[in-house]
Length: 108
Image (cartoon, rainbow, N blue to C red; front, side):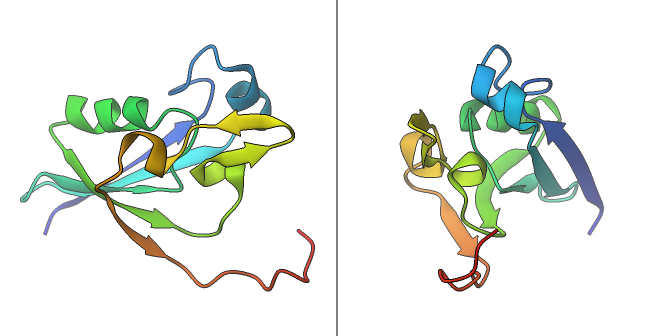
């Protein structure tokens, strides 16, 4: 396996022009295999199609997502009264691997 990685900053590398993405400055990562041309998107949000396009421009196909923790500004949902596009909004057939979450009683 020949691995490749890409760190993408919201508002700069994807979701350009989205004020929430620009303000939150979240990273989403692509981790891929150059032999299979398949990649996982880590913590996708704001504009998942942009992230898939970045993978495609590098000769990779996004085949799944790794969700390290659930915050709407990382994976989509309602956040501070704003709806944030996430995985389910534009990639409904994706295979997701979700890491164990922090207990709800704990504050971030």
